[in-house]
Image 1 (cartoon, rainbow, N blue to C red):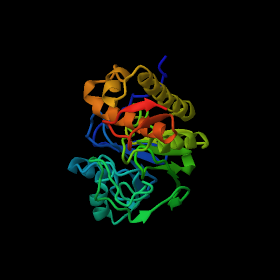
Image 2 (image 1 turned 120 degrees about the horizontal axis):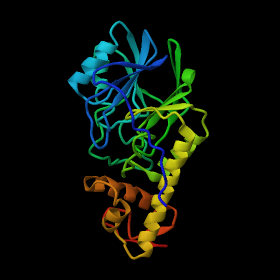
Image 3 (image 1 turned 60 degrees about the horizontal axis):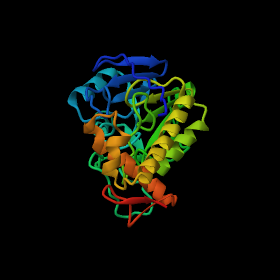
Image 4 (image 1 turned 90 degrees about the vertical axis):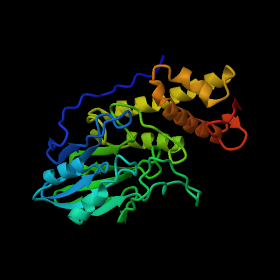
Length: 301
């Protein structure tokens, strides 16, 4: 039986409006809905008066204008970036130019990849973003009435950083954990081993609520994270079953493993299976000739 993930998908908002979702948190949703962004990118404003902005979002004039309306009369002291996909970080540039605030993030796109001087990254990366201040796991960022802890969670991308608002025990999870869908892990920058380790890391924390960049809050985080781990373990089991029945290529596996998914999402699903293959090959459970690719032939070890 497939793993049941307790998805939460109901979210009330109006594009361009600024909603107060907690005493210290406001949200403005960009009008960039898609199969990968759900209703759009949720940009968060932390604090009052002297504020931080998390994930300014895509480079859309209407969204930047909505943010400026929401920030009128306030001082932006920090711009925090969970990761450098084009629906999260590009609007940091105009926001910085208009406010003078410094940007904070783990590093440029691909900066978390290990052992590679010539980093290959996917097309959807924001290659222009370089943070003014590079932050690492456990770093603390403080403002007027708010304190944020940096929680490094590579996997979806190698530079993915969550941010924990200590005053509310709230974790801004970017794309690492979302309520409406599982996260895409797409090599070469996405890494399944890191993603699974990052999920297990969240189970050691005492966060009481998650605020993903897409979709609604997750108010019961631990069971949700456990279901995500179980879901990935189930995908691994499915891959092993496919190999046992003689299907050796990812393109043969995807239509069967993702039969309930829109065919338009098959390319993304194939990259997710590739991420699993990399993890299985690294552990010696599956073998292939050369490095794992979308067109490789795979076999059980």
